[in-house]
View 1 (cartoon, rainbow over the protein chains, first blue to last red):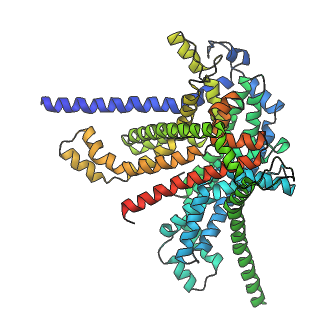
View 2 (view 1 turned 90 degrees about the vertical axis):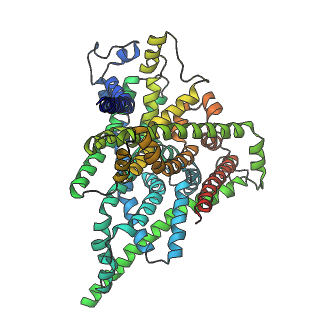
Length: 282
Length: 299
């Protein structure tokens, strides 16, 4: 009886520890973002006067108004979305075509191409961008979002290719491709009826990853863009680099920047999850 | 008529598929051959800025880099930053995964999404600004809280604390990646193993020692190595956090040194030499581990 009580107490203690650690980690993960969002709604004078009380001063949308009307935030957002959506579509599509055509190669060649793309994944962005920067300068086509799309494809494509080539082996229904080929189906039919339905969830996941990588990228944008074509991370960094730090503006920019990444992800992932059950997750 | 439609369709197909392959080859060239080739080529020259007036120097840039104290300082900072943040991320990510394992599926999913927020939806620029805001000596919530509790001013951007702060931010940002990998390997443990140890009267600690840890060990090792490599090549977080100034030259890793040499001092030759050495070290580390694993596994 006593042993059972002790066991029950031990289980209760384990649960208590689990709950406490979970709560602490949840706070650690999202409290900083919550604080950023709350601070974006406070007047600049309130943020700068320490110790500031969150509920003492009235909340305001002035920081957002200032951000949207007086800075390059909107054009930065537009540029980021153009680049990220292009990369989100192109990276999985090209990886699909590459993997599909790669299946027609011998096993040795397939292995060599997998090693090649894995090695490509290990090349640091700062190393890739240096010669790209020089090449673009010598070619004379500078400050173009198209170049940034190419740069971001360099970041996303190797991952997409490696993931797809491993998933293609396991995901495509056994014999389906062979049956279609025996029936005289052409390449596009095989791609449309065997590959895309089987790899749909993976392609959706890869599109989201490519989109996020592109939206979040600072390195490539920093080196390849300037002026009017600046993307969102560059615009936000511009606000931070000002000699006088307007924390209200910075907090509002940060909050909207997080929303800008989150909303498309939520929209795409919820549509995707409605359509597919299971599948790959980022 | 039918035949010409069919041949037109076949030509279109070939164009689409081989066009796609051509784009992939171009990306391949852009990702590996052109950058690495250019890097090696430029590292052997005296190229400064975009001047067409440069000469072949052989390995002089490499020798010169080895002589510079800033090269060794960058290497030391890279090692400190990569190892420190890799340990932080691995420990925190593993704790997150273990904590997740104790919840029911639906709750686990919700908590996992919350844990994943810093990794997925917070761009590096915002993450760094957010933490710089929290630790700002004048308005930072963390600094003010510490001041209220201890009565002391804490300068997280001081020389004694700046590297720890940088490692802390990286840990916050990238620990969810480790969590994802480790929690996946926990989910793959067959439930009968837990049942067996429960029937034997094992406690939670026994379950961890005999079931969970042996199953997640290889995953932890693998993901820690991947994080180590990724952190050693990280540029954005250190650059954004340290800014361009004395902190950057004193605590910046090699990637920041490459940036400073190339874009601020326009010494492309030397920057490329440092880039080549970094790349070689990286490949050496990766392939040593791959070979070691292959020899150990007998494959």
